[in-house]
Length: 496
Image (cartoon, rainbow, N blue to C red; front, side, top):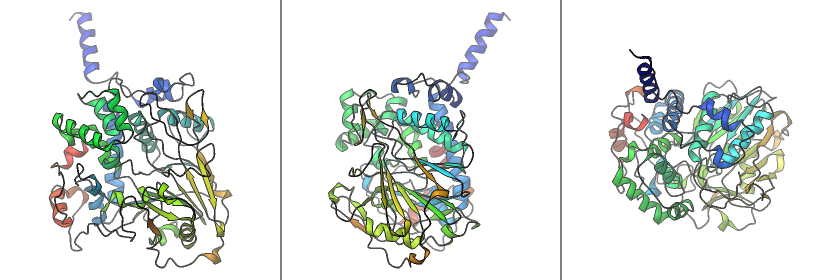
């Protein structure tokens, strides 16, 4: 056969098998750790050939871990809830979106340093600059391996508002997949269908992967959280594609299975991470105190719960005397938060989420020390103008040259954390009234929200691999009214 024809066949084969498709190593070499790349438009790569497949491979690797290790590490009933938590109505009745909540812990040495980052919101600029900082400080290498006694924690809200949520997810999940014992990956309120459907990520995914064109004015409106417009976009999407086959659905369906709370624990030191606020009334017991305890996952509720009423996703932590109208509807006062930390022997609570600006420094960090040596820290990843969306966010020092706030990592050294006064640690008691409501969304402050879903005590689930009839069974055990739009699908469609 003519050599030219053979070469042509090889080129066609390579293109069809995506040999030349984008991959993680290429992204790291050409963009992330290339200091010559300084502009956000040069950092983006979601429009390159093969990115959709690269992203799916990354998501499926995360999903396999969540199925095997997380579902396998939970009691059967809770594993069932986590596995099938997303068969709920999404539009138009998004206020009733449910999910399962659990905590994860990492056991570390006393010499460990934690680097945590708050809300990234689709800013590839801040993530890239943050990864470069970690590399230059020998926290990670150029292949995203975490080095030494270091832990990296993300407190959620990776998507929406900014224009590069796809790139952010690809890099963050790749980092987690390589370092599952050294990275905490929590979800925030934007890792839900409810919020990401109207604040930008729905539009971003469908603009990237579906044959749907939108004007820049529409993009701007959706990015600002235009709920009415969000529903109109969803109606257009529903007419053009099968929703459960979309990249948006597959992505959010997997992200909703991430933990909502994380702990980094060494001998006599506990650092808690959450996106919003704590859940008063939870007694973690041996999960926080016994390092050789055989389980590293802790179910927070005994049911599916409504996302919009979940304090770990939505609540704010506020000083006792402040304007609570700045909250998202749920909040916990500092006095109650302090007691929560003292009663459980938690040294530091680190959160994100809040729009409350008073006392935040130029890096987007707020610190509040309490009695007994405990401390609350809020870190928000502030950023300014997204050139692709025209959206303004942030409240800290503004870099007029680059039009972005300074990226920052919060550094927490376990061996430098102040010892707690053990004599002040008290009983948990009844803390159900700690969580308060401020005119926004309605919620039950009880440990298990009133509008939750119980599963029969005698339910025989079998093994995780035997969930073929799971969705039908979930409808039966939940007993919720069908008052919204339901989607029929099986696990193979959802996960693959």
